[in-house]
Image (cartoon, rainbow, N blue to C red; front, side):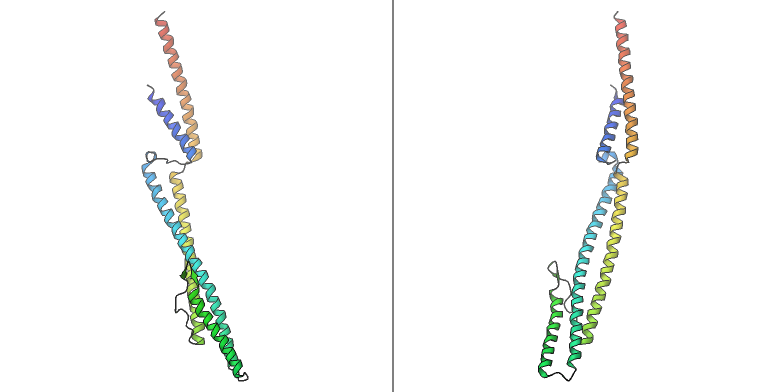
Length: 219
């Protein structure tokens, strides 16, 4: 039995499989240590991808909050303008009442933005973030909250970029571990195919020689 030829055919079949699948490791027997490393890297890649999604969601929430803070700042500016107007003693009582009513609606608008700004049905701005008790505290609390939110967004951007880079690097490492080097595999396949044909030709010649010797014995 030509076990060498059978082994060679098996090796050729594995090379064809690697080319077809595009992977050097298709089963544990191909490279147990390499497979374990690739599986560990796959877990790391999925973890980083999940982190990226989390960061993206947090950024979306931060952007929604920033839009609300922008609206609050507009309301605050309008309130300040009304306060300046109300200080003018040329307005009548009815004028001042109208200004005060408008100011109250702006203040209510700030409270509504704080309580009703939602992301995924959850409040995007914590209750009590903005202090509307005075002009100074109102504007200061809005500016502080918006600044903190902006810094948080920038931190998320940095973390998301870092996670993306780590994911790409790990993916590249995993590819080097398990993917087929096409040029090298094709070269090996050509070599194995040539050797297989050579062995087959030797086998046919050996069989022909044996048949010829057997014929000579019975003449």
